[in-house]
Length: 382
Image (tube, rainbow, N blue to C red):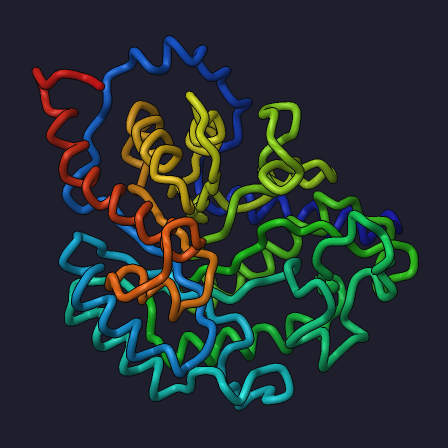
């Protein structure tokens, strides 16, 4: 990277990181599992974020989602819904990247109105940078010149998902237009930009690459999105947290923690971004929660399809809770229709992803009430 370009990039990152007061400090070591288990639970406040993350798989399933909201999610205490849309939308600014089977602006307006009526904050999500398909989809299918690196080795047994090039000026030009359409359609106060599991990065074969490290590229992607979503549009930004967790800090996989050098970006991004800290397996102590809290972020722990793991994560986050601990988020990671059917009790056998994810939501929903009762002064600890 040229000296002038390096200085400009690092200066911009440093400025963005100081947008919110609260300079980064090193993470405090987490207590041993036994010590953590003996710490008292801190009840979440009544206005804690009790959320569900659902992946939009097509507009034909929207009636099921409407029913699940009114018949299950709202009655069971959910007050936040992240709807991951990605390219399942009939974009007009760049129709070449969207799906004709995706939802449209009228669908979005109707869903937003339903959520408001049910007391649910609706947060649209558009997956950014990585996770652009095992083979290119959406943006990269229509604009392959924006892929980074341009020619990934699909024969590599470790190949995962392709990435777009955050250094190419055309990338933001298109992506910001797509985000603007979703903001206009949903009229949200919050926007989730994804950013999980980014495995491929620009290299010497990538246009506009000048030797930037993975952390610098990742921080640039975050800060560019922040400048648009937060500074320009006035919304609060959410993102997944896995690329910010050092592999030396936790003995987790390359999906849940950074094994490719992105973790230094945690000190180069604004602290008012909400970090969705996802972990899906049972552990006695989820140390990453404390990492993000100590760094000054608001944290939203996220579980998936194991009731026992979700409840362990929920209770562990209660022990670490501060006023920046938002609550708990249940993800589904399956087709929206099958997940909604499982929530509604209309099929799907035990052992299916949708059934297990729905059962996990029900277990966590029970905990939203029961967990706070147990955490009350004088109550017996689990």
